[in-house]
Amino acid sequence: VQLQAYGGGLVQAGGSLRLSCAASGRTFSTYTMGWFRQAPGEEREFVVGISGSGSITYYSDSVKGRFTVSRDNAKNTVYLQMNSLKPEDTAVYYCAADGTHHNLVTDAMRWYTYWGQGTLVTVSS
Figure 1 (cartoon, rainbow, N blue to C red):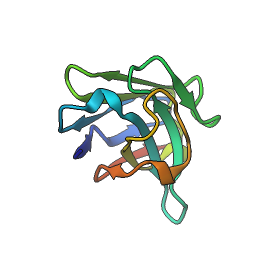
Figure 2: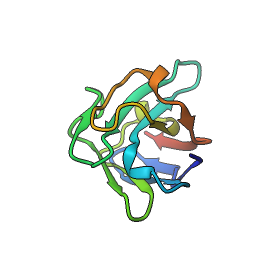
Figure 3: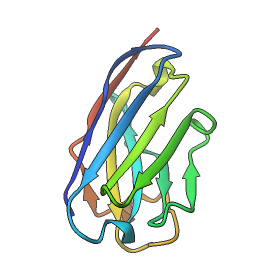
Figure 4: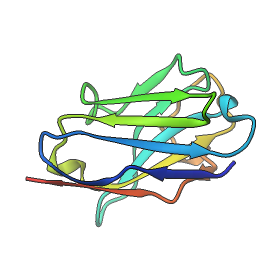
């Protein structure tokens, strides 16, 4: 599966952005999808994941209550709605696909075998 993330940009603290990740292929609904991010000089970290059916989500503590993940399997797209953005949310955001865990969500990067190219989110203070 090929992934393309887009929707990043520059936003002021407290603002919102919606990221999208478009996937190719006919089996999108069988993949657990995850969003990860990598800030300058930092390791890539898990942000949120959503199961293939969309019924299970798992958020990192740092974004819980501010970010919302969703997916539209008919459009082969997963979304990340980011509200109440903080400067510490500044990072390159990546979408990724886990083809092993269809109805589970893991935050372990090693299970996500397909990655998009990343989209930069910059939050100014």
